[in-house]
Structure formats: structure tokens, C-alpha cells
Image (cartoon, rainbow, N blue to C red):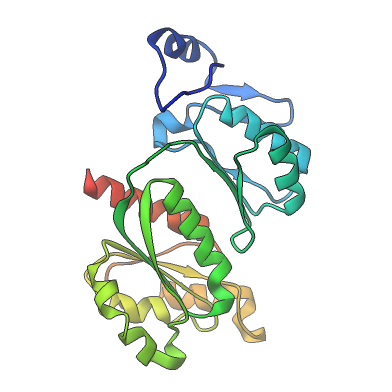
Length: 242
């Protein structure tokens, strides 16, 4: 397939791409090249369980027809394999994401704030931030504002109340999203993390607490699912902005 240049294709190249199957069969994987047409963002690669060579092959196939790439739960070995074929990759060691963004001078839509309860929650919060930024959103961060020192959260209320969408990331008892949702008008996406002592059951306690919240305007994604939260927040913001 012809590569996308400057975000555009000629009519002839577009017809060629539309004439082939909507996915590319790599034998071990079928790459969905029409995901971007349906969803506005190309297929995302989940790195866990895949070898570095498999990840690099999938990445190359995606970049042959798209100007953006995202790989989550990626190792540095996977980074090395992808970088051998594409020199412009970026790796976030905290979020464990590999990304490529060839949209020069992309204007970012403001409005997302990501609040994390503690430093241990940062990997999940960073994953959400990487996703939202790659989808064209500006992201502000509010870190270490868990309810154990709730006065720190209150100091950030002006920023939170200006947000269009808020992602609240917390482990332990998972109280932070409920508190934030009770103080703001914007929708809040709650992300439970697997951070916590034994009775947290690997994030299950936080997940159940968030699902049982009485605060209005609160939605919940799965444990440690920063990707899902960032993607959903970007969709809400972009659709609302349009």
C-alpha cells in the first residue's frame, strides 16, 4: 500500500486502498487497515504476549497505511525491533508505550485533565495521557492528589473545574473518582489500578468501589486500563468540540 503523505492520499491511491481487503493477513495476525476509517484512529497493538519481531511486523504494516502508531504494554526489546524499521518511534518507559505521530503541527484540542491519586498510579495515568495526546488532545495532569491528603486535591479544583473531561486514576480503596465527580460538572472516567495491599485484591476493591459510587457523571473502565480511559476521553472531547 502507498504510505499516507502529509495526511492526504491522491484519488488513485485511495481507490487502490479501497479495492483491497479491509485487513492485511500477516499469517500470525490480521491488521485492520480500515479501523481508522471507522473509528478515526488506527488499530492499536497490545504488546503483551507478542514477540518483538511480531510487534515490529505489525507496526510496519500499520505505518504503511497510517501516519500514527500506538503499541501498549511494550518492552524495550519490542522498541528495539520496531526502531530497526522505523527510526521516528517514541517510547515512554513509565507508560510502556511505543508511538509514532507523523502529523506535523497537529493542533491539540484542550480540555482533558488526568488526576492520579499517588505516584504508584502514574504508569496507568501516563498511558492514558499518551493515548489522548496521540488522538489530538491536549492533556493537563494533576498528580498525587489522593484522599489521604485531600487538601492537595482542593488546591487543584480551578483546573479540574475548567476541564471538559476528567480521568481519575486510583488504587487502594479507589475513592478519588467519586470525590472529584461530586465537585465538577465534567464527565469523570474512573480508572482503578492494581496498586494496594492484600485486601485490594489486585485492584478489585477499587473497581467495585468505583462501580458503586453515588456520584453522578462517573463512568468506570477496567483495572489498569489507562488506554481505554484515554481513548474514551479523547472521543468525548473531540465529538463535543466538533
